[in-house]
Image 1 (cartoon, rainbow, N blue to C red):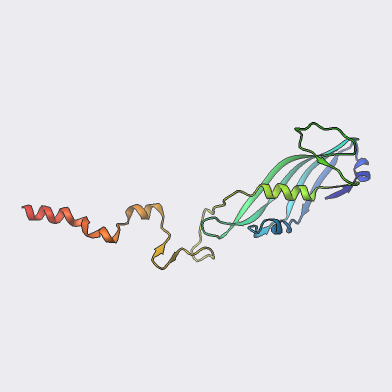
Image 2: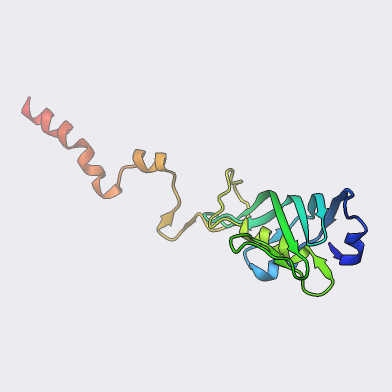
Length: 175
């Protein structure tokens, strides 16, 4: 994902296609919640001019993150379409534009892709289907257990269970 400016200038006014798969395992160091990273597939094209290089990219892959509720592994699919512009030496830009300045004579997309992946991680991730017995957060313990909303509404508090028959006993004594 690195190109020298000379390599890119050879493709000026020509089609510069990108179709690569990269390993991004080092982003696990940046965010300790990331348990695994699939190979990231990058496709797109580069538009090269004398003042800037613009990449139109599609980033696909997935990250493995812990479920916020149960801590089991969740595959978070990544599908991002982005446009990244690198300004070459002396090029002018508008203050509101998001651009990258080229330092040296190499354009490296790797740090940009890493940043995009880190920004795609949501605050909370939830798994849809919990497999019983799968390693995760404990679902019960001493004097507690995780229950669903339905179970909560159908369950009678054992301290109040005797009151359930209060009116039945009261009506039978009146007759």
